[in-house]
Length: 105
Image 1 (tube, rainbow, N blue to C red):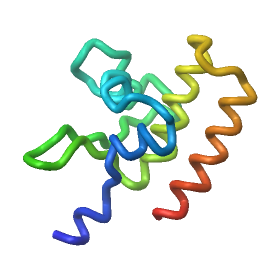
Image 2 (image 1 turned 180 degrees about the vertical axis):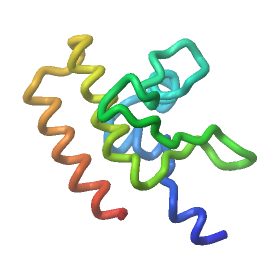
Image 3 (image 1 turned 90 degrees about the vertical axis):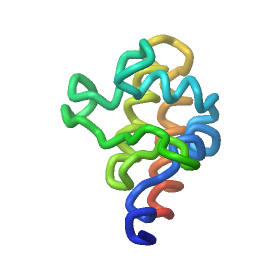
Image 4 (image 1 turned 120 degrees about the horizontal axis):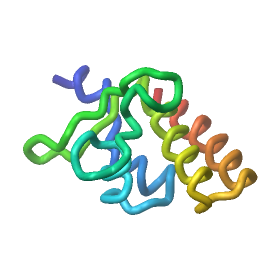
């Protein structure tokens, strides 16, 4: 069980600590359901469907450890495209995310 928990990262923590966003908005952007663009889907980024698991029991939504940086990249790319970030902010946040998430790998 401990190994399984180490294979995923908490999406709410990524939303707060890495993306500085409301977790509900991040969930809406990445989830298949909820009316968002489903950024975890294969139409974005590197073309892979990322492993994002819905909340189960007492745990919130999670993302597979190996998909976390790509998920952050997709959310930041989306925010850049919609104009809520400029390129400098995008690049800085992505760099910080790669460094921060690499520390958890």
